[in-house]
Image (cartoon, rainbow, N blue to C red):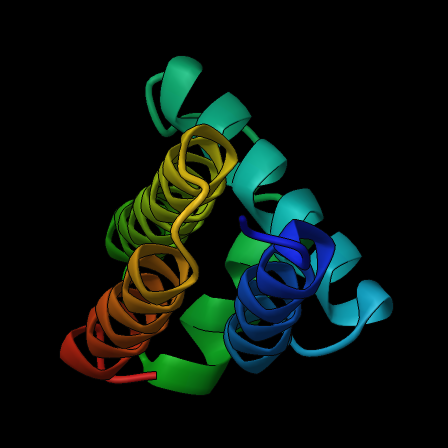
Length: 128
């Protein structure tokens, strides 16, 4: 009988947390990214017209891009970030659900190890 499901859940959650931190950094940086995404999406929705939002302008100045290029780059990065976060969540929740259904310690260990490997490979493939 499997006695330590919370241990396996914690291993999976902790690994996912460390990878998310690697992608996002701290909470202030996550806020910065979200703000840039919101400004870029609003600017795009306005047809790339009007005043260039400050977060978009920062990319224009730093990278020598047009406002549209900077805006599209911010949105592409945000979409990539959301894909990574959603995929990490899917791997994490699926593994925990599978562990919940087993009473075999070796199966639970294997599920945990595979989930950790899959999450790590996702981050490495994303170049983070």
